[in-house]
Length: 618
Ligand SMILES: Cc1cc2nc3c(=O)[nH]c(=O)nc-3n(C[C@H](O)[C@H](O)[C@H](O)COP(=O)(O)OP(=O)(O)OC[C@H]3O[C@@H](n4cnc5c(N)ncnc54)[C@H](O)[C@@H]3O)c2cc1C
Image 1 (cartoon, helix red, strand yellow):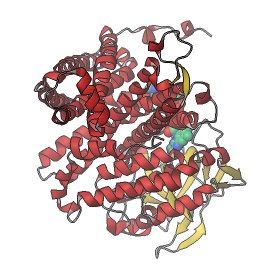
Image 2 (cartoon, rainbow, N blue to C red):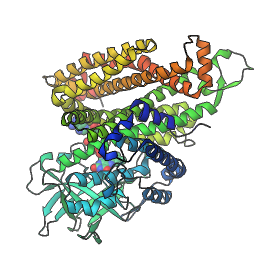
Image 3 (cartoon, helix red, strand yellow):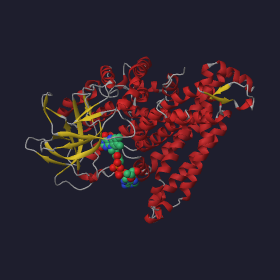
Image 4 (spheres, rainbow, N blue to C red):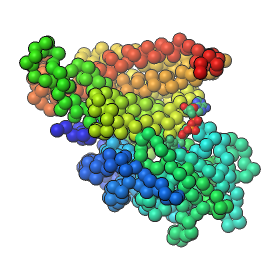
């Protein structure tokens, strides 16, 4: 039976053949590390995922979380898995070892994340948020705050959250009404109600640290007047010991479509007038700190979408090989022909390759961005550091929104491969689709990400970051052109790069004109075409590496039968041939549709903006 979890070969290809990550070992930060060590970490993550975390996936969903009079219980099976997770120190892989982290490269953490999140999305929310809260303290905390909180968050002793949303302040965070008033002892009194807080209350950890956005009385309106406070569920004394329970009450949890094993909580701060918080960073700098941290978390949310897709693909592939239905098309109407596994049917093969093309492309994209973080940390030249930093900024909304949209689409496609069984609870793909959907909504909806891309990121550094990205794409085109078997694909990607440049110029100009609303109505389609083009580039890059390897194995034979015979016999030849065929599928099947989408953006239909509210009907 096929593995139901990403194959190591797929991860190793990206790490070592595509990105050549061993190059970063020269950086002083990674002194003493080597490939053997990286391999060990990824293997251990895989083992933990398969043996301990994946078995909690369906059970966690069925049992769900329960709310009783202010307390929340997580699924019973999570306790053992979380203990092992904590003991294995899997929470803060890239963070400073002196603060409870592992000091590993981001790209290795990305490979680990693929296994762990792919095994159980809801389970991983607990550690992702502890990590995010810690990151904010690292960025803006005092030495005392770092000493009090970081190790406990990074080792999973305490949980963390991210507390922004209120009923009237969702996408519009600046509209929040939670207040903070300074006390004589230096702490602040926090008063307000928040909703939709992931893991806002749970019984996995002895304490929970809530980073809460609130407005200090008299501060400016909007996002400029927002400050950030650390509000521990149980107060933390100056010597690190636990004090009195804080005035933070969970008043309920949401009934929702997916991630049933992660509570989405309503929290009241200061209902009895006794909620204490510590200011994190300076007054009115809350959004700045939050946004800095959000870049990392948004990439993680994109990764959540991608990893669900990867897991759903592996399940669908396994099912398509096992399930027999109908006969091979070539058998005609012969009633004696054997029943075929559905993987033999062209339409099922189309679905599978569509899924694989997106999964492989998203893997390369997300690992490349993670590796860019490593390159930033290792760069000695400040200009190069800035250039790479701009890449991350430009690509953050694309990774978040594109991977969450396509991640969900791939899960839905997996359901289709299962037929009726995909719609039932007999197999986990329906759960994957339910779980994956949230990625397009939280951490700033995909619509908001698209506005960020068009309104801010596209023009970053006068458009230099975007032009730099096109330059990187052109390099892969030039390399691919050296191989005749890839020339057609290279031409199509080249055409795509030019069209993307023109489309960006057009929509960017429109966004600065009187028709700016029309431009923003096309912002998400633009983000999607940019994502498609990046994936086409990734595939060309991958094919450019695979082609010479395949040629070494096949020799100079041009006979298709002989080629097919060698590919069927040699696993590695089949692997590289699969990369080239997947690239061909994406570039020659999906990209032409993307060209059509670019044309729609260029036409710039304004109906969505012009239509009268009443004309929508209803
Ligand atoms: C399961 C779950 C977990 C969550 N976890 C957390 C958490 O841990 N912490 C936290 O603080 N929040 C959390 N959230 C809240 C989440 O971040 C918000 O739901 C999200 O930001 C959208 O806000 P909203 O629900 O108020 O929708 P709204 O802001 O009302 O948006 C509704 C629609 O309008 C669009 N829209 C809104 N404003 C604009 C605009 N200016 N331009 C264009 N389109 C716009 C949106 O894109 C969306 O499609 C969670 C939500 C859920 C469902």
